[in-house]
Length: 265
Image (cartoon, rainbow, N blue to C red; front, side):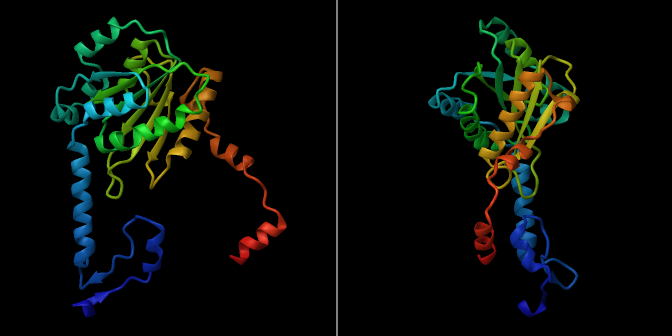
């Protein structure tokens, strides 16, 4: 049967990307193996959208890392409403809103919200390692309790931050699953959060996962944006992310001997 397979000349490039390139051909169709792999990835993406967030485990893991936690739910009563009514995912349920109003919390500088979004897999896998990485950089910050939010859209963080009196809110939310990344986390940072903020008032860091933007790199970017947002009093289009340039300028310049050794390798 292998005699009928036509290999793609780009096959050597597959080691550099998860993109579906150089899959070969069997007649006018894909070979069976890449077709089955595509179907598996599609099923994993669908599962990521519908899989519920295990909030009990998440709270337990957060408390084990000495984070104080809160639990909230959006106005979307279930997954079906969440997917069909994005507006409900942007506002708190009446019960959660009243619970936050009753809290007596000193106004924090930053509140982190872990939200299921479109991939509870991402929230479960990536959020705590990221929080651990960034917390070590925020030694002079007043950090509020970590809020775990179910059936949440990005804008839900605005209402949460407003009710808690936070200067900044950081949403750690599951991104829309791709066929090679069902567990990718997005980070959305908003200064002076309140109901009605637009996406132009936020900064976004995407594709946070070990195979994409890893935790140290994501923590570096987030710390940079938080620091400058606090200093300038703005996020979104008024806050430019120059964190990569900062890393490049901090990198040591290789000597001539280093360069020669590198080329020899």
